[in-house]
Image 1 (cartoon, rainbow, N blue to C red):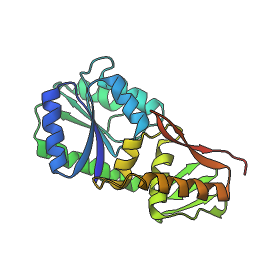
Image 2: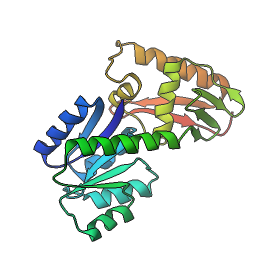
Image 3: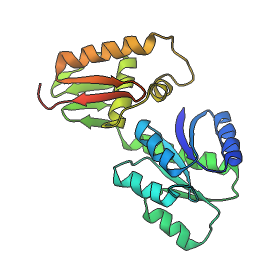
Image 4: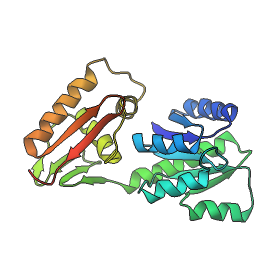
Length: 224
């Protein structure tokens, strides 16, 4: 399942896009302004971002530039009513990966999102945070030279925390990324988080902290 962020201030259009994307088995978060978009980007991991240029508070070009400036390399598709070459060039210069002019066919948006998400998924096979390394394909992790022994679900949780590092991941976003549409029972996240913390503690100086109304955050020290 592809998880993406839609940033669009036209709520009617946003609703139509979300409905269509969900029919295509995509999980879609929504922000209606640039400030909210940057906040969601910091909290959750997305495989693609669909970003309108004409936004309140911060426009799409500013959002794209700020995201790239802090190291966010999530593929971005810019949406706009502007079809001049100079407008497209401006988007690409700020770090956009693709450009779609309104009005557009929903089918075309889906094809472009899937293409960018697939390209992204093939780019990163390993994640590193200090001495902690995770092989996404093999679903294995090392702290220095010590293997991390935990369940596949705990490993999936660790992957999301490492992708977001040094930012926290809120509870809802974490559950959606790990379990998708399958809602776990009330204790599942708690149990798997306990096991992950135990596994991290056994191999090095790393843990997962939790802050109410903020979320879970990976804490890693170079010292064992």
